[in-house]
Image (tube, rainbow over all chains, first blue to last red; front, side, top):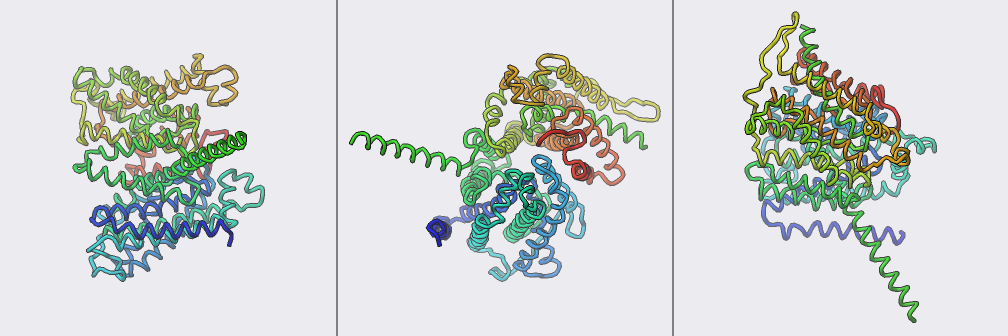
Length: 335
Length: 286
């Protein structure tokens, strides 16, 4: 193991410990809800990151995969009594398969055409589910209450078990991304992001790697869909396929800083509490002021911190280093 | 029947065309995909509504005024926000207008409530018969108005010095700057013009359409699809794409079912863009 690896592993462990310590301060149901949302959107942001931050395919339609995952596990659970955990696995595999099929024609599209294509995908699949009687059409499905516990993936007394489940999902995703970033695949993704024609010229099979990125991203997003379905215990097209889910996922990742591992986690840790708190304090009657502040926040961030929090941290770090070097140089001259 | 539907689609397409033209103009000049375009249409509809309620200016007659207001507003938004983001990374440029959209839609909801409103006394009302086809007068007036504004913008881009400079920027930004074109100033004008298009469309729509905070979202999305369909940066392409979409929406809504009409638009987009990855009339780099 190199020093870098040890440091990063230590960071991951420290991160897990911090994550496990949060519930000590989060004693109310509402603060636990915020924690759940933070881990959920951190995972979703990381999944987006694989596709957009690394492989350069900006998606604004992640809700398509998210909702599909939610529906797969819920239908299995409601109609066939399949365990939600197995359902989650099925949701991941089914969304990944769906994404591969959709990705085949989509991988031809670039930049904005791809981004708008994903918006279109999100809207289309929502309409399909709104009119599909077998899955409850616009009313959706209720997941029947069961005894709480890990077996049923339902927890009624406290939201904390959801949080730990989400945290485990996040740590798994982070570990996966850590390995991915250091593997050939990670470099291929970045090469495709920077210039796919050149990457292809150098022998990267761009269609195959684009499909892998889309499938992995969709699979993780689909599993998150199951997670939210079990958390809220109902699925409904307007809720699960909502365009704002797609937008929030992209925002979380970009706000934190896309194209690196830690960015989306930071982004979610800051944006989700802001979003939930403003909603709780100001938006009690659906007045819209909560989202108004949220929108203003995004605009300000794009104007003042376009590289995201990670970019900001790097800049501050660089300026401190430069200052220290300057001081060192001055001391050398003085002596 | 099909004639009736096609006419309806054409009328709808003209308004989509005007909205799309503004979007296309903004994209062509500064490379920003304006996801807030629908929100600006909504703001214009409210402006038109207040003008008719408090000042007594009919939405149709007030169109130039609303367009002018939105032009000024566009310059302000450009100076305060868009111009600063232009130098930033791709993702910031892509997301800033999302932020604007969320902000304005919810501002409308906060300030003016989510209630549906409607302009009560509009001068264009009634139905006329054109051969076998029924045409609702407000829609006809709005479409003709859209075509007039679109024509004016087209004339401005092709015949005036400022317009030619704007076109030069969309063809090659750095070469245009080297020829002495003031990019900042023209970007601001182009953004203002883009919003003026949205404004005019909003005012014309206000004469017969319900007004509520989320009303612009679908117009914005449809315009986005129309512009992508036509090819980013091609103004004519946007107009053609928009009319195509208007017809798909009306025919699809009738033959397949109204709940599927937007899904059909998006399906058409995906199919066309897969066949032609740069849209019908797009060219150049993305």
